[in-house]
Length: 107
Image (cartoon, rainbow, N blue to C red; front, side, top):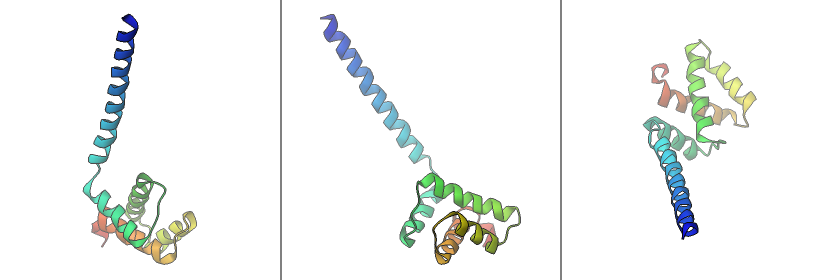
């Protein structure tokens, strides 16, 4: 009887751990800014692939930081081309989408 109770408690703990992990993952996704989903969707529609949503979003935010620091679009384009396999057209699209979604004051 003790063994049955131990297994039941262990199963309940395992199910609780899985549910808690799932809820944390869902909460993290749900708390993403609306512009994140729109930005990622624009990349998807253009056929631009990325390693993870977080990396793509961080690159977009970095684009805005570069503009804040006084970088030109040509400099940012060159940086993107050096650090990715994007075509020049897709690099420009990425910049425009990043600015549109995260720093529209540069439009």
